[in-house]
Length: 417
Image (cartoon, rainbow, N blue to C red; front, side, top):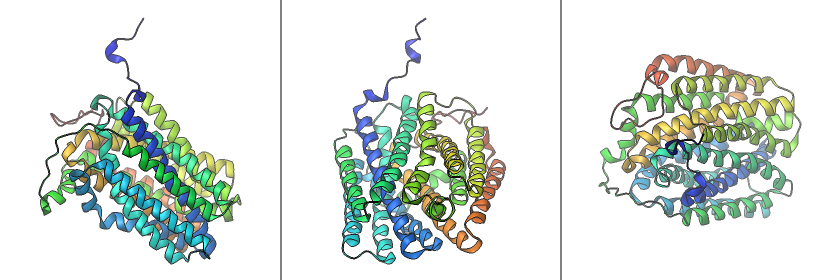
């Protein structure tokens, strides 16, 4: 029996703007991941310090924190495609600076941090603009699938990027950074060709109220606040990405190529999960599912911390990535479905700060605790901390735990189980 027409899912490939967006995001993320592998290995070779690896994350997070309110307002006032293209050009320049510096005698770690600060400033403008651009590319009815598809682009690049980064770094840091510059150029070309639906977004005059509107919007919705803050503290405590160069070199003894595989392993699991969710969207009990996924993330972190087997480490990192992807899709869908287009940039900017806090600031936290307690104990404590966050957040945000479906509540209220 043929399926009813109302149940047929249109192919995402039918939306050319989304396809260009998908390819552009693959290139942007791949370039970032390749550069992260190169910088992580280069900084650890220069300093032999876990704390120095933590500073790599801090250098990229600080501009995101300092510019958060400005970047969100820019994404709501100006053409989002133009913002993304300009950011790719700045990132291209940063990669070129690292390449030239490595070519002519090498770069001191301080110079690398300075370039990363500029790179982080570009990403702080890019991230909210990209997030706010996506809903204008597809009909709202398939937005959750588009978000999962976009996440698959991110994870596909996070698989290929680190592996490619480890391979090209074997030819030298100059070749690795030059390749990153070319990839960022490709992203700029893809995003620049997108023809998005134009929405009538009023240009608010710049005021304290308009600048802080994104923060007030999130504060006023306990479901969104709970989802964003859960992800923030779980990944902040449980993230061990910054310490992967140490695991690769000193614990697992697998070299730069192995480091690329370790960095890509979470994305393997995340990609598989995002493809599954794009095909089979979450239907019920999304709040409980999110808490369960974060708990699995914490358990996987503990197992990875204690592993001395390369195969087991790859498997646990893949499980970690798959569980994190469930949380990402739920959180992103809640934000995009609930936020008016005129405020998406500012809300996305605040969300980007939370993401940056959990990722880049989490790298700094991991490097700092590893310097204090040792590498393995710090990662174990992070995993335990993630599990404690899940228990506390279930009590602090009961409405999030009761959230049943991913539907817009602009005309009503959240549908609880």
